[in-house]
Structures are given as structure tokens and as C-alpha cells.
Image 1: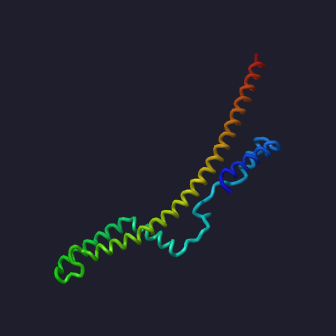
Image 2: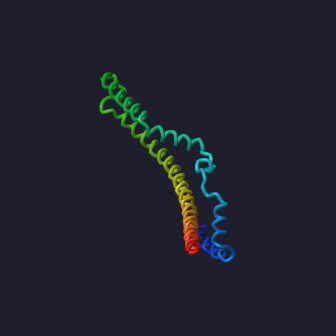
Image 3: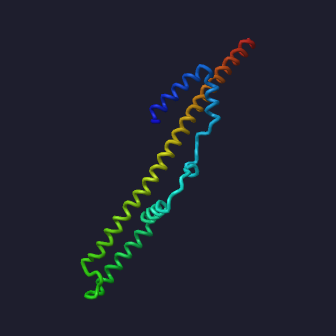
Length: 167
């Protein structure tokens, strides 16, 4: 069911419920149901071994440890092959190194994108949850504001009555 149909259904339900209940009853019904959810715990889906590996690779590939170790590996490769000169396994211009770098990039990029897609879905669910919580909070604050206004109005009436009795 798409969002528009859900919204229309909620509007119809509210219109029908409004005839049977007053605003206070509807608010109390909203308060009875907990909206907030711990997204990390309610996610419920178990990741496959490949997805876990992709997440770990993406986490490692985005770290300083990876950058420094990979830079060290590249420099070591070039220094060793430069020192070996004619006996080098990958002499300058390091064609084998270029092939290895291309293969690493070709494999690493999709793994990182898969991890980012899963994170994006989690963020979308978290944002939807935040929206629902904020909306419920807005209703509650609005109701509390109305009640405070009513209390202040009643307090003013009581003060007026006390002043008129004293005179």
C-alpha cells in the first residue's frame, strides 16, 4: 500500500473516530501506543556472510590504517623493484602493480557501495522513526499547551472572583 493510500485511510479513520471520541480520548489512544523503536535492535534481519564481509572491508578501506598500510605496500613494491633492477619481478613502469591496483579498485568499489546501500536503508528507517516520534511529540506538546491555556484562563477567572468578593 503506497503512502497516499495510507494517508487517505488514516484521514477516513480519524473522521469516523472523531464522531465517537473527543480530542482528549484520541490523544490518549495515541499515547498508549509506543512509536519510538530502537532501529538497531528491531532491524531483525540477519546479514549473510558476504554482507558482513562487505561491511568489514568497507570499514577497513575507509580507515587510516588501510591508507598507511597500502601506501607502505606500494612504496615497498616500487623500492624493491627499483633496487632489483634487471632481476625485478615488476620493473619500471610497474605494469603488474597497475594491474593489481585496478583489480583492487574493481573489487573494492562494489563492496563499499553494497555496504553504503545497507546503511542508507537503515538511515531511511531511522529518519521515518524520528519523524513519527516528532509528530507524536508535536501533538502532545500542542495538547499540553491547550491545557496550560485552559488552566491560565481558569486561574484568571478565579482571581477575578476573589477580587470581586474582597471588594
